Image (cartoon, rainbow, N blue to C red; front, side, top):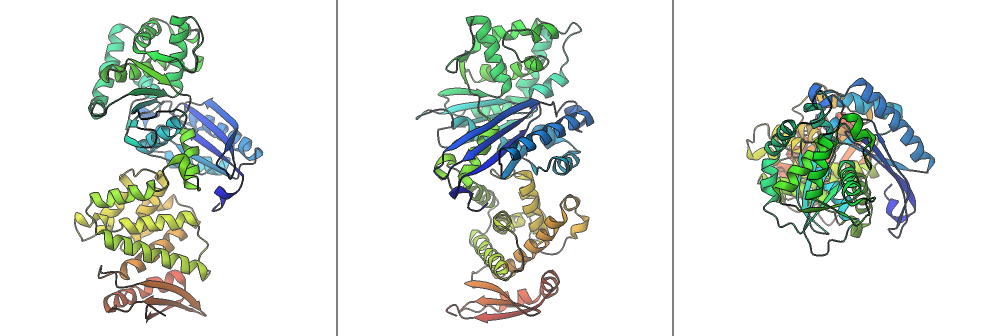
Length: 522
């Protein structure tokens, strides 16, 4: 969908959260306007039992797969050309997550991608600030999910701080069971708060370093708490402009703690499906508002799936919507610079890798698209990042860094795929022995083999790290793979390096390599 930003089209966004699965189907126009066609949410408790057993449970998987199938049908019936789907904490931490991802793909036809906690925080930030006018104010955003709580600080156009805590309503409710009568005694609630304060202490300290002009809360938990408290203490339904005060929150918590589960289910304003987790979620908000001295918080009905929409618009030509067009490259450069990489060599390797990719496509040697091209570029930027640890086996260190750095703008699959391109580009690792490779489809494994070979060629074409090669092109002639290297300088080191990789290149392209150095003006 390279031209998606230039024509009307429909896209669906799915968020597989710990507590609920959400769907957003949007019709996008060329002038950046969009129309919401469907916005659905269903509670599936995907994370039920997962945080103590570290496995998604069979019943939870079955519920989620059922909803995924129905949502996919709704999206496609609405004309969705693409379904963008992400999974968060419950899937992120599950040891059997690949089994679940495979089931979603096979039974619902959805490629579900796992995102890191910080990427989740970034997307939530995009979604929430896209619906409010901050002007010149700095906002603190709090989103309490089932398995994690995302916090951020930012302005209308920029996130200054992003973080994710392993604190969520479903997670804590499973960890701290109510008393025998279903109520929460003051002692039990104090234990929950103490645990949260300990877990959040570092994040709170980091948040305190920023000025906070306004606080905004998102997620079903915070919306539900505001509904309950405003109905109970103001005697009317919540209006969109209402702020939830800390005093009202603490009164509401005392009320909810003193109730049995059945009594909580009947509280005016509550979603009965949240009755068993509402106290745990409230304790998180209680602690954060108390520690950050937030006296009132605005409630937003926007969140992750809205951020997915704005991120999509930014990546497909609507830069002024998301203002994050170059976020991925900035994330890559930030990691490289933190590792003190040779930026000139990184840029030259990336440039040559893209020239090889494009000319190979022109020669009908592959049919890979923009996504694979972009991942090759970023892998090329970071292929040498791990050399600051030790040059010997640097590709293993670089691969590890890319896999675990949680770069913003990338999902888990993309991080893994880039790390594998880097890991294999020197040919010192047997792909069949790398566990993550076995989870790739046959097509992705072939793509990985091609992309890692292109990176290997680009690396050798700047072997002296002096940017002597001005351009490079791949051509095909009968059973020959013609590699034209354009340079007016001495390229003996680079040409020798390419020749040393002849066996691998011949095998991957199934043609005999022939290299030629040509003048730059040719």
